[in-house]
Amino acid sequence: MALTYRDLLSIDDLAEADMQGIFSRAAAHFDRNREASKRIGALSGRTVVNLFFEPSTRTLLSFDIAAKRLDADAATLPLDQSSLKKGESFDDTIHTVGAMRPDIVVIRHGEHEALQRAAGLLEPSVVNAGSGARHHPTQALLDAFTLTRRWGSLEGKRILICGDIVRSRVAGSNIALLRKLGAEVRLAGPAAFLPKKTTASTFNDFGAALEGADAVMMLRIQHERALGGADAPALEDYVRDWRLDAARLGKAKPDALVLHPGPMNRGVEITGEIADGERSLIREQVESGVAVRMAVMEWALGIEI
Ligand code: CP
Image (cartoon, rainbow, N blue to C red; front, side, top):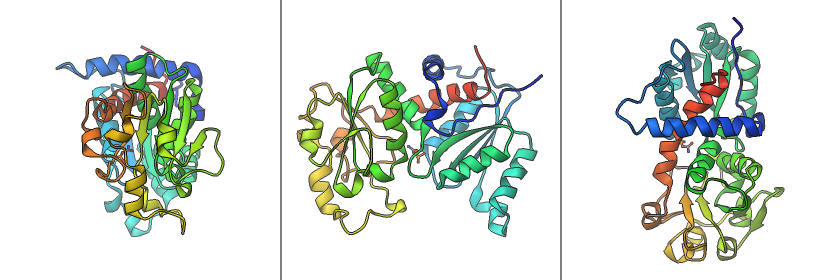
């Protein structure tokens, strides 16, 4: 029997029907994940391998838990103890993983081209767990799913993404997905953190950007991807002008929701009061992450239930 292996490298790999199918499956998983018995046999006998070439807490753990809740065998290669350290090449590492006959290989890498290369070398599904500075499709899916649970539809909703947009893979995938789902996307931040070319509207003034916002997604500064040059703001200036606090959130709609993909730098881009406040969806985003990644793995293997 021919097996189905679909790759998810970017939001562009998903048609409208794929997204709706993933959200529908994720909704069932979300509810079941709150029950005592969380496991179903959808991926029974299948194997998922996690290859994370960059650090992760949420994404790695949630893919691991998602695979196990679907009854798959899950294995994570600890890359800092792998034979890459003995000089083995990326391609040979990927071929070695492929020879063990996994069904899904989940990869995080600093270069999107590495994901594309792995997908070309591997027969099993490759699922992107964050690549380069533009792609984190399962994060965007879980963010949109979290908002969809509140609103039903994102059509016409004004969603502001604020912070280090230009280096954020979360922003890259969210701009693409939220617009596909009919939302109005605004981007705000200091000039050094805004993309030169984008289809979204951009703002240098946080207060103006917040006006009429239905949701605000705050992003951390991506120090590991280097700051944006001489015009990047000093940290104290950034905190003064761009930290989301209660006064600033008051400029958005009265019931505006707050998101953050994590990891958060409390006190820098967001105050603890807002992060832990009643309008914050930050922990629900993490919860959604397990459900959405379960649905993505079913989609990747063409499993219809
Ligand atoms: N949001 C996100 O990708 O978090 P991790 O880096 O902890 O996986």
